Length: 117
Length: 115
Image 1 (cartoon, one colour):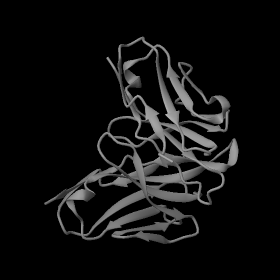
Image 2 (image 1 turned 135 degrees about the vertical axis):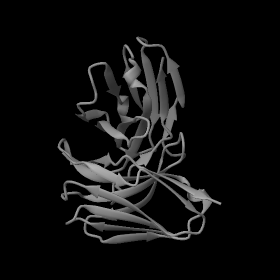
Image 3 (image 1 turned 90 degrees about the vertical axis):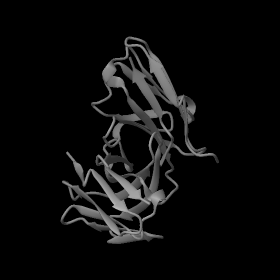
């Protein structure tokens, strides 16, 4: 059974700092890995998707890396801003037995990030 | 295209009552997923539809839970005889076979509180 763990559970840093969020998973047979952002009481917004054949993806100030062999991914946020405050969720895609083309997402518990002005 | 829509946004009910949530996926998305998220945890997969067919259900989906997707459009999730342990955020997501990455787009969720 795939298990996803995120460390730390919570992080508070001053504005402007660069930071790294960590994600580990137990089964390296994944398809893709995604990082999501969730604001309080809201749904999920996809930030980055890394295909299993890729090592990293970048979007603006965000960079995500993937090391399948070690079962790890990191999300790097550069020059953090108060608007980055949210919970960040890592999710790995596992294939559904009933539909080989579809995937279910297995999530970590998230890292609650607070950027202090 | 307004994204995935879920209604109601919040539902407060008494233990033992039945509740029903609705999800309207992105139009022409043939894949639809339901997830449940409890406080402080990540979402957990509940069930998957391809068009109108419910193809997979998690062991988390007890017999008090039922989901439908008539005509392969909107979906409903019903919980019968609610229990306090059912209190959670219920999230719906949709995706299309046509998109190369099968990205799941999430709705804002329905937050259920069982008193």
